[in-house]
Amino acid sequence: AMRHLPYFCRGEVVKGFGRGSKELGIPTANFSEQVVESFPSDISTGIYYGWACVGNGDVHKMVLSIGWNPFYKNIKKSVETHIIHTFKEDFYGEILSIVIIGYIRPEKNFDSLEALISAIQEDIEEAKRQLDLPEHLKLKEDNFFHLPQGKIVNNH
Ligand code: ADP
Ligand code: MG
View 1 (cartoon, rainbow, N blue to C red):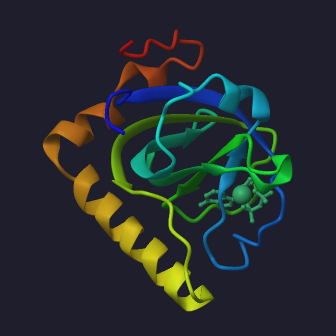
View 2: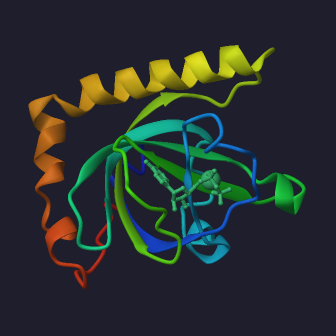
View 3: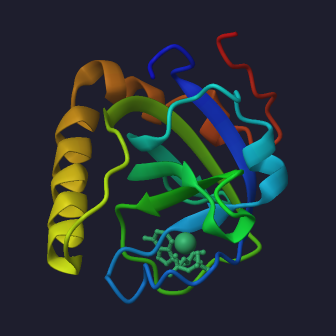
């Protein structure tokens, strides 16, 4: 799971398939199919943490899920970012920049909505702890977030 990390990515936020993430209090900003296709095809599905920024805005902690996209009968992946920040408004159509830094866990099926929500809350706490480590804080200041037109250079 770690081989491709850190992974830098930038793309437009598109409408998802209404799994009701926002209703659970954990909205996820979805990348377009085109951006998802540009990911390494062997990147593991599961939950990751990293940094994210909308447009030229501030850089925030995030948790990210790479999963199988039910809209495409689970043959394509979806990449969804939950930014650990409260936004005043939705930001569909804006450019989301992220760096994926670490892996938390594989995808799981949950017996109940409560179990799902509490797992995500644990993921968020784990992301917050990890991202406070000096080696991870460094990436928050990366030029990638300050130069919107900057070239994306991943480590492969
Ligand atoms: P969709 O199925 O369209 O992705 P969601 O319920 O997952 O709908 O909500 C995602 C949208 O919520 C994002 O595209 C964004 O515009 C908005 N949003 C507001 N706050 C956040 C946040 N903290 N993290 C991610 N998206 C957010
Ligand atoms: Mg979503």
